[in-house]
Image (cartoon, rainbow, N blue to C red; front, side, top):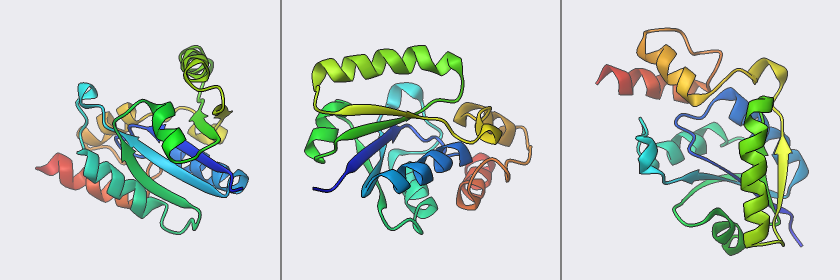
Length: 160
């Protein structure tokens, strides 16, 4: 039986911290699906299709990783993909309380799907998509914080 994990998020945009968690998860699971959430209430900079494509391009060299999108309950999506685990990234203690609540609710909704918390390398713990967008909007250099394809997309999107 294949070990399948879902790594969900809005990924608006994907950061090197996200990519680090994806690479770590790819070593532990046979298949990792980076599931981009459709969440228009967050008013994303990039469309759902753009975010999926940015993820797809960034993970292209990882043979057991793919990008997809979902708009249902996460545990329903995970079950439909036959996943055994949901991977969640933790940057700081402040993330833990919220993520812990989500994990408990997901367990209540479907106890067969485990939540696994992974921390990115310490060099990425300060990264967030929100901060990246703000730096890019103000003309700052984000090249060391995001994959090259995301940096190009940010420049193009914010120029428009």
